[in-house]
Image 1: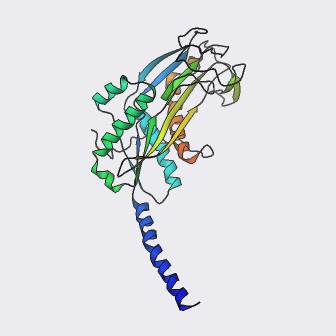
Image 2: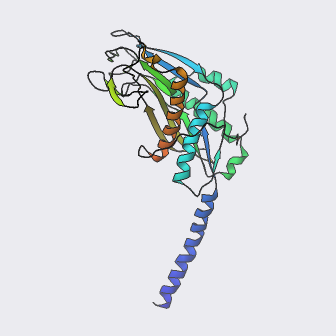
Image 3: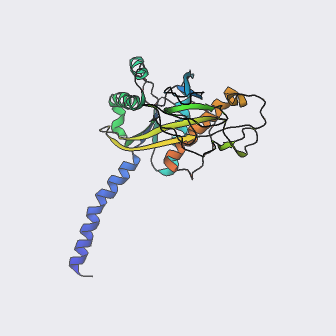
Length: 294
C-alpha cells in the first residue's frame, strides 16, 4: 500500500472516530417514557338502532382509581424498549393532566381531543429541565378512530370495553356523520375466545376489551414530533356455556378489567416489537414519578 493510501486511510479513521464517539454518547442518554391514556375507560354497548340517524351505541365512562391504565401500558413499553435497545437506559414518567386541562379535554371530541392531549403533554414536558439529558420521548396517547372495524363499535378511542349483545351482529349505519358500513364476515360472526377454557370459537355476540392508542415519538430537545404509530387491539370473549343472557355478564367486571390491563400491557409492547413478539404480563406495581406532578 502506498504512503498516500495510508494517509487517506488514517484520515478516514480520524473522521469516523468523532461520529462513533457521538453515537456511543447518544446511546447513553435515556429515553423518557410516558403514558397519557388517562384514568378512565369507556363502556360502549350496541343497541337497536337500525335504519335511523342515531348511532346504535350507548356510551358511558368508568372512572378508575389511580394510574393503573397508564402504568400497565408503561410496563409493556418499557419491556419492549429494553429488548429493542438494551444499551439505552430508560426513564419512566408519570403525568396527570391539570384540572383545567381535563375540563378542556372533556369538551373536546374525536381528533380534536387527540391533539389537545398531545399539546397538554408537550406543555408539561417543556417545563421539565430534565429533558436536556434525554435522547427522545416515547409517549402513549389515546387515538380516536371514527369508523367501525373488525366487528367493533364506532368512534372508539383510548381504552374501553365494547359489548355486542345483538344476535345478528349487523349494524346498518346511515345518515350524515355516522360511520360507514360494517367491516367483517357477512353473517356477523367473529372469532371469539371462551374465557373459561381459552378455546377459540365464532359468535355474533361478545364482550371485547379494546385498546386504541398512538405511540408518538418526540425529540427531547425541541419536542417536535418525529414519529407516530397507531395501535388497535381487542379480544372478543364469548362463553357458549354461560347462563347469563347478557354477554356482558359472561365475565365478572373485575375479571374483565384484569383482562383489559393485560391487553393494554401487551398492546404497548407490540407497538414496538410487533405482533410476533410476546410478553409475559407483569405483576402490577406502581412506577416511580420520574417527573414532578404539575
